[in-house]
Length: 262
Image 1 (cartoon, one colour):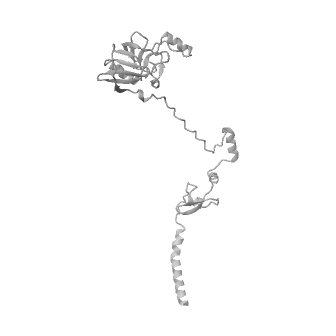
Image 2: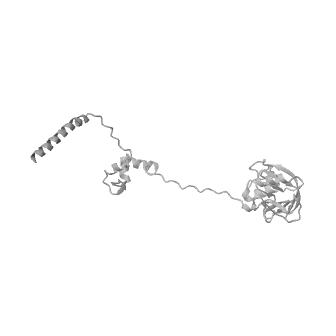
Image 3: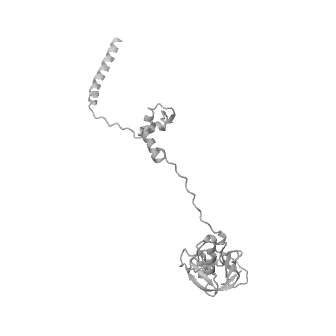
């Protein structure tokens, strides 16, 4: 046994002697650079902490440092400097500003879909090509052959300004000018609204894209820049349609067309 122990010891010494030169040479080798994680919350850093709170990360239990403790590692300003900033800006600059609640989108007034153009049955006495306006239901009918009619939604006169009768189209105009009657100017001035004596045709003009003049009256079938008023009693006696609809009607009728207002 003593001989075996000596042999093993000798073998061990030989192994150590062989490894010694390699270890000596390693001392002079260039070591790789030490890379420090830029993320100070990396698990190996967090394991150094002694703060309470254990989180299992990838199967290893690590100690989590509170946010306030970690913020000091990022170079938190001195308390005096933070107090000075609060006095200048009225709040702690290190705190995240409150995000304002998104504004609710304003929804533009909408026209009731029932007033969109559509083809309907017609059993009245008027001949094809005649325009029939039902002021009570706020519909304009262009009578067509075969017991049919093309129906449009309209805005009609306010209370006390609705009229009935039969006229003919005496003139047609594209983007017509607007010259409010003197009576209308006076009436609106009493309400605190000043109307222009003349307004050139265009998108801002209340007569809209087209106008069909009725006889020698001041009334017209015209468009509007306020389509949400279709289906209401809103005008001073004129019949208004959406711009899209008055353009469509304009192309379907001519001067001399009969217009029946009921």
